Amino acid sequence: MGNAVAHADPGTHDEDRVVRLRLAITEDHTLLIDVQDPLPAFPNFEQASAGELGRGLWEVGRLGGALSWHLCERGGKAVRARMMPGLVPA
Image 1 (tube, helix red, strand yellow):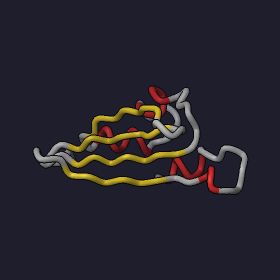
Image 2: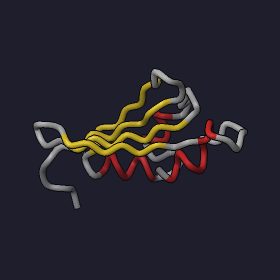
Image 3: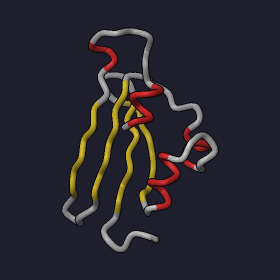
Image 4: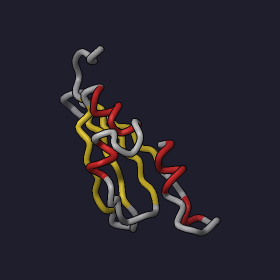
């Protein structure tokens, strides 16, 4: 969420700068964490996930989260962390 707030400013200061957080638990007890921002691209997703551009997404992966991102129907993108139930690595 912090990354979206810090990096997803489309250059305006109106409703287009909305960042959304969605949490959901699926029937198989998987936690889905979606962070949506107004920018339709994530050009450095692989580097960010690998910890080469900060540690936030890398830390989610280290804790067992499967990371992905996709374009949203109404514009912008969503970054998703899929956290499976079980033990968290130390």
